[in-house]
Length: 218
Image (cartoon, rainbow, N blue to C red; front, side, top):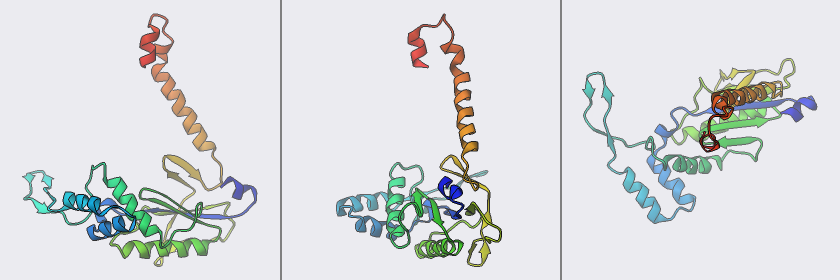
């Protein structure tokens, strides 16, 4: 982003959020993606056995509902679920993604970039189509668009005729990305976090009456 700012070129970014990502993964799609990724059949069957006959209840104010079958989505809280979701997304993205840095993915966070607003809009539509073919869905309310080094009249990005929210900064993977290409706000935030951490332990570390052994455990 800093390079685009320095060279006075636009960079268009869409931060895509998936709606209830884990809950919407179809089971048949999961088995297909595992096999296509080269997972041994015996492991596919082990995972199938984990998901077969899975049931749950809903807790509410007056107690619990009757048990019912869960026939779609990944298990919440399972250590295996992020890995299974990554397999599904990797196979899905083979249809639509471009090489880094034009498409970046981490779990269910997708960033689509392009030097052209029209191109980033086209790529967003391709992602929407690929996701919806698999019963997954782009969150219209949480997906946002940002233009780095924006010129006047750059316009907006639309998804199926609906305007994507335009922002000047976006928090991606814990870091604040700014449309002006600067990183000063993020640097200040990290410096402040460092000072806050130091203040929490400085009373112990600077106390001469406390042994080095105890300080080493802090």
